[in-house]
Length: 553
Image 1 (cartoon, rainbow, N blue to C red):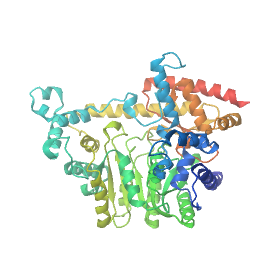
Image 2 (image 1 turned 90 degrees about the vertical axis):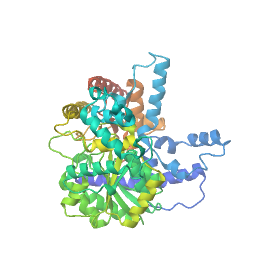
Image 3 (image 1 turned 45 degrees about the horizontal axis):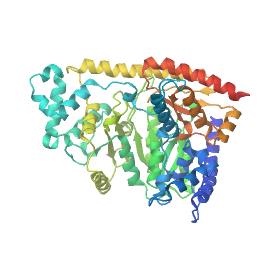
Image 4 (image 1 turned 60 degrees about the vertical axis):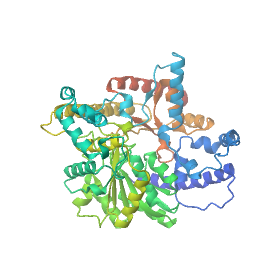
């Protein structure tokens, strides 16, 4: 624990050193003439440092020169667009993925030109793209809502379950004009919010108010909305876990704030320590940063840990004591794979402590993209907003109104996720079979990949207690680090690129999520179908041995 604390303290110092150096280089590249002042890890800093392209960006000016010459004839150039856009990075769809897409085109045009016959995308939590089937009940209801005339056809009862037909009729009656192509209330259809609130009450055992629920196109727009609300300038900060899901660093950058990092402790299974939160909060305050909120991702992305209820209580108490908004990313709440852990929402934990709306400000995010449903393309989700004043809630509603409303299919799915078939419904047995089959398979895949990674030379991988990812650490030989430097890229990006070219397997370098400097990781999803996992293990194992043999001596 002492060693871990020293490493994380050293990491923060090194982040700040890299920040000063990178700003100096950026001044040279972009010919900024204004004075840059020292401050803690700002959104621009972290997005630059976490990018897999960090090394190439700051080791060479060739890309900057090329960029300037390639678009100088256009009225809009990289030098006159919003600089916040340039600061923003999103590694999950970054350089390695772009290379993979190019290789995929090569395979189509020239089969047999690579040592693999398909690209396996383990870079992103996109279950249905990798073969996961949708939940039948959910899709039956969606289909009937989209074409309500089918509900009146005599053959419909033979094609659709009775509870799907009944649910579709109920939902259709809630929608303006009974048409899924119509706009809804800016917070989402009231009847669907009622259903979601009831589902939250059943999950937590505490009341939920449908007026606290804002339906959104997935969880991401809700996160952006909160950042837009909270961040006034780079003097406002958000405490974010490192490693983190790059949505947060990107959103903070786009909205002009500062990312204040707190390090998860890899040695204790990616533990979240209150002492670390306090240390980083105090450091930010000394640097003139007003920390507005704390982001907690539970279950963790990319790290896969599930917080204990005791740890969650300490986090809630910390936020109350410090006056921080608690931003609870709970999109993987259905993805818990170990019997000794259970998901508890932060709202449930706060209410069990006796904290009400006047005690703590809490925003909880949920999505239809994860869990066992994996409906990423339907773009459904919501945020439950509690503990804000009436005046601020009006401003949140105003922001939602600017976007008119989220898509209706996503709204319907969000209500179905929070109110699936019950005992006695015709669809119940099939629903349970599909849900349990998906979750048990994910647990087996996680265990298989975890065990495989831990057999590789120089690789250690914590248990995936939940979510959809593993985040193994890899100790790279010095020659590999030097080769990466020569290639003007980060060492973990160098490893991931080599893995892709040798095997067709796409993973994301850890530098895209943040990590203790001097350590290297990659994120790998557990989503490829179970029958493909052995082949993936074989490909990665064979590649890793050759890679280490090449660079060991």
